[in-house]
Image (tube, one colour):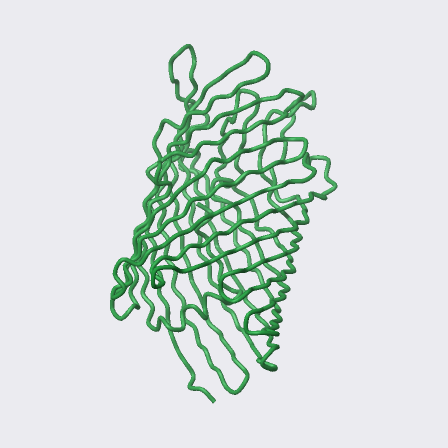
Length: 421
């Protein structure tokens, strides 16, 4: 029987987006029309999270339980300009100020059993209560939305050999809408159509079956099947003649998704240099059966190369970053080719490793170039976007017992929100 372990982890995050106002978009409508517009979407975001967890292990059984609280505040000041007769003119109907806040409280319980040297399993139950509030300062309107989600999970593990490890998981989860989808104002993607946010968006529910294989500690292969209900989709807006004039967002879609992922991880130079390669191929089939669902299927490809190098081992001073590339193809609608991005960060640990500080810059080149080709109302349009955007994030994290932190982050109740910005 082992001694019970108790630990509390506190996380604090501070981020600021320094997005410039000259985000240029060029649209070419075949065969003879070219238009320009630009927009700026600077925002500042405050994030805070804290959690308290209890862990106990005896014989071949383990239990973990705890609570986690997080809060995020986002302030977004959006501006939009059109190039008319060689002059940039602001569009006051589109320019707006939008603020969003979110509070989330989660409680979880995990039971694990090591049946034998080869077999083990765990059962997780987590309950998340989320309160959100969107505030449009331009129209002086507020949109509150509160919900509760229970997420069960079952994981079976099989280790036939020291070098081979299999995991099978069944999970019920949920997805939150992106912050930009909640902004109720219109954003013109072209003179042909607009995209309008929906502050009444709700969360989506998903069910997944995942099979993972790990070879030693450097190769991981994953196959997962995911079905999503109440998915957040773009809903076409029609004019009196039935032509598409714009899009908004709604919770009406359903989809089935098949995902293949490959992860390679290696350390070199006395384990100072860590390289990680991650790639994904995703196929999504849309089957809502709704006349407004204009899509059929989607292919998405994603490649990410992450690196980190330990400069000073005593304080775990690490220099790192990543470079990524992604591309999507939506049948009968659009082709989107994403250009590479790159991020750099510097981190260090103090106070016996419990205090960690990280300074990161994303995107380090301060540009995000995207090419897109779409079909709308029988008209082919091509767009080239040059987005001047970068944010700097300072993260301060303190762990009362760092040794148990990884155990907590591996459980199924962990839900990061960083990708929603």
